[in-house]
Length: 148
Image 1 (cartoon, rainbow, N blue to C red):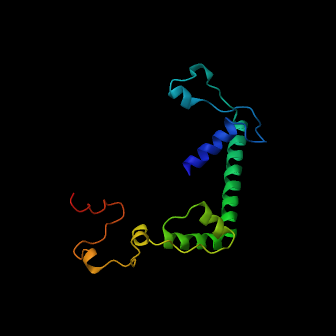
Image 2: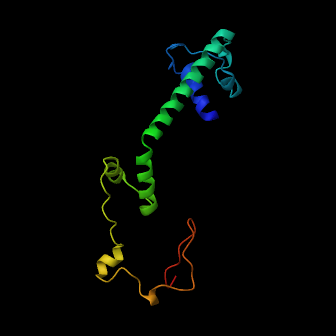
Image 3: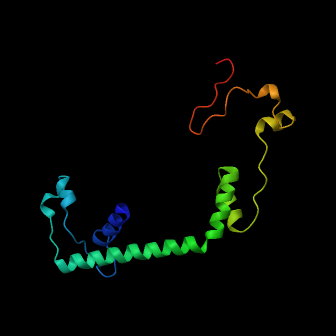
């Protein structure tokens, strides 16, 4: 929350993105003084201006929160479809998202490349699957290739 309110404050005080405050930069520049920049440019603001800035920052944050909540609520079904697709496939690209957004089905997953090239069944033979080693945990290094 600190990051968002800090950015909103900068939008109002530095970037002139508030109709109420306007394009004038307001506020003190303590951070820049602390960092050793623009030492002579410290500016004080009135209590009224500080209240206006606080009100604008709160208004911007409240509006952003309401908009985000509305977007998520209005698209809850689509978000659930995307989450289910991610559980099945682990990754989605832009084309996949376009299909889901338009309500279309995703194409079936392609078989692994080694199964395509050999023309054999995609199921591994028992001798190809080591029974003693468990599958790697996410983030753990994979098994070393034979002969390494």
